Image (cartoon, rainbow, N blue to C red):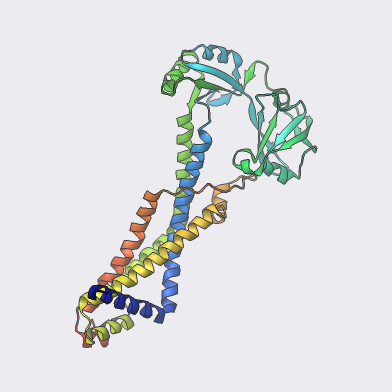
Length: 380
């Protein structure tokens, strides 16, 4: 072993033994440090995983959704609009969609009702999400009643319960036939909730949207990109709330780092004085403190990062549940697909590790350059 490597090994061995002698302070330091990293990494993992999940889910969304607006509010759209839109150059198909919301006053929950576009359901039958089935204690073959817009109850038979794996999309969903949905909501004949428009060339989506507005000024075309931007804005808003919630932890770390940079304890100053008096050079002491900072910061960073990964991707972010649910009574229980933005991890590493190393080295250097006798007496 070369003298340089032997010197590094000896300094590292002394660093480990020094940290173990102060294990109480070390554990409290690692706990505070890793907690801050855990909170920030959890927010980062959660936000990016949700964005990734939204991108996957919206990949199959229609290129265009056309809604009719009356008085600034969404209104049923005449089916004649679908015929005219289908004749626009570049449009490959127009599909009327029938859906609506139902408020369950007994449970304070909102359901989404949607008509199937095929013959997978018979009149009087419904398919429901696993969250709704659990909330109401329903299973295949059970009866489920909904109050119609005319004040009369309609009884349906549960023919299918969606798999819990699809909870993100179906937890509050009720699928029914078009006829049952029209009767329940008293939809006018010849109208739909909105129109799904397929465009042959994705680059022509905006052109088709402009043409639709020219033909029907009372319509609002919504592109897939518009929906993605809306989801991104919602996730940014949610992550902002989480960051505000985590601000106390962030400020605790800032104050902690500032305290470290303002000076070192009398015992540490005394230890540096003893090392200087026994022949240690200033660069050896700085190397000792650098190793100490690296061990503490890397250990805390990895603990916080691993803890955040487990919290988000294995336990579905239980600490963030209240922020996620908002006012929702029915909320999907799902496990996010692991997705890590390594650029964000690198930024978190730089912002959390380097300031701590600086706050460790600077006061140690200031203590190492003073007279050893003065340092051992606790002087400055």
